[in-house]
Amino acid sequence: MKTLFILLALMTSLNVYSAQKQLSPREDVMTHEEIKQTVSNTINALEHTYLYPERATQLRALLSAKLNNNGFRPNQTVDDFRRVLRSIIIKATKDTSIDIVREYPITLTSITSSKKENTYQHNDSIEAEILEHNIGYLKLAGNINFNGVYQAIEKAFESLSGADAMIIDLRLADETHMQIAQLIVSYFVPNNTIIGQVEYSGSTSPLVSLMQEQSAKQALPLYILNSSFVAGEWEFISYTLKHFNKAMIVGEETMGVGHFTKQINLNKHLTLKLPYAVIKHPVTQQVWDENGVVPDHFTKADKAFDKAYEIALRMLNTIDNK
Image 1 (spheres, rainbow, N blue to C red):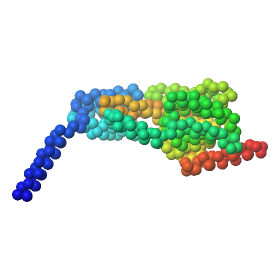
Image 2 (cartoon, rainbow, N blue to C red; image 1 turned 90 degrees about the vertical axis):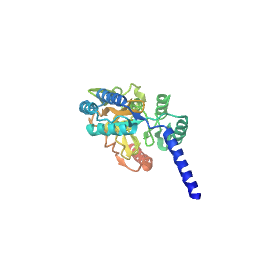
Image 3 (cartoon, one colour; image 1 turned 60 degrees about the horizontal axis):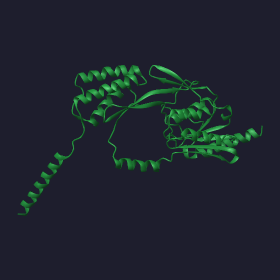
Image 4 (cartoon, helix red, strand yellow; image 1 turned 90 degrees about the horizontal axis):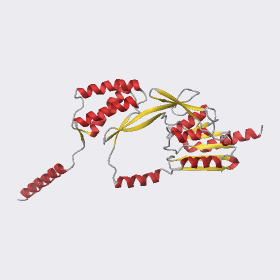
């Protein structure tokens, strides 16, 4: 009797599990039409936005052939399709800066947790102060792309205008955009100086320093602090000023992200991250991509400030003794 009861309980549990499994929502799958449209959107983005059009031409032929030959299995999950498409693109272009990202619906819970995490991890700030021996210190941390950021940077440089040397701390800098980097570089080079050649797909455009009063320009010993996490637009500042002989770089090699990317929606589930531009230095004709910005003085990131301050003091004493 006891055995029969256990068997009945087990059968009931299995039936409940089976019913729950049937009622559970099925994973998102890609229909043939969705796959066809997504591949078409991918080809269009690569041909019109991708930095290297010759690779896009080869990839178009590959993707079109695979689509026409039913090489993409219909009714596969979004994640499976993403992996297949990403693999094809990277194998054809040999460009690992391309990525396909799965987008998930944003819920109130995810917004709340994300906001708390960002508050904890990123102290978005622009801090400026004059240290002992009249050394200016500008610290840029977190995401420097908030409302009023231009005015905040201008105010910071104005407060440091009387310094005899300056340290710019980028070690904790996260996201920004090229206009901010262009503005910061413009404080140290003459007006209308070509500070970079921006290469797009099939075209090149010069990037010049911004118009400012010459009295606002900083002509003083400059030290930029880097960590291995510094990337993108922040690397542009370091690389540009280093190779104009305007700054000395202290700390670690940066990440080496010289390509600038755009995000293009392929469908409601997937987004294509695609490099669309690269900036070459007008003097070196090189870019920091992959290799990063190499410091003039290597030191661990947490020791970079002390090292830069020491070098600045030594430089100021040398100037005073002349």
